[in-house]
Image (cartoon, rainbow, N blue to C red; front, side, top):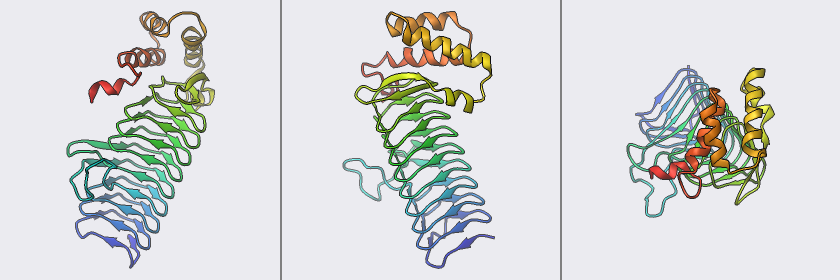
Length: 266
């Protein structure tokens, strides 16, 4: 049986699952769906038509699914969707915006830890098992893939793709695509520093797969030559799917002058 605090405002058309806890002064908008076993702490605000899966924990003062920050867009203008998966922890003061326009989506996967003050802009796609530390800011239309770990206050430019199991150090300002499995730090431009060893272990890759990634890193980032040419050559030579993912990221990002492949689909 769900527990809804008397001061909470839950629209009559919202769908509330089993064993949901909704705290004081929380707001759930029209046609939103809250899955089983979710917890909405005090003053959480859920916009209209937002879909939230099961066992999510939303801490105090989150604002989830209200209008994106776009010049000329009014508070009650129609927006796209926001879909959140299962088993996410969304800490205090997080803001997540829906898709900019009807038919567009912001998607948050499963088992993510989104810490205090993080912002996810409109039309962002998050994978699974991601950690976003305090006050990291993700601009619109970014793709952040499975297993990424952001340290504090990481900033990501719009239309940027962050590959799976990447680690970004604190205060990084990322303005171009980052291939999978790497450590990145710095800003404008950020620099590739090393392989994310801990990420490989979190990904549960076997010794052979890890070795192939280390070898690829040396060929791509430690050998002489042009990065794109090295990536094209290695992509033709390898059959390892993880190495191919690294090469494909480099090849795709080279198609756009600022290194952001998704910009091609504006």
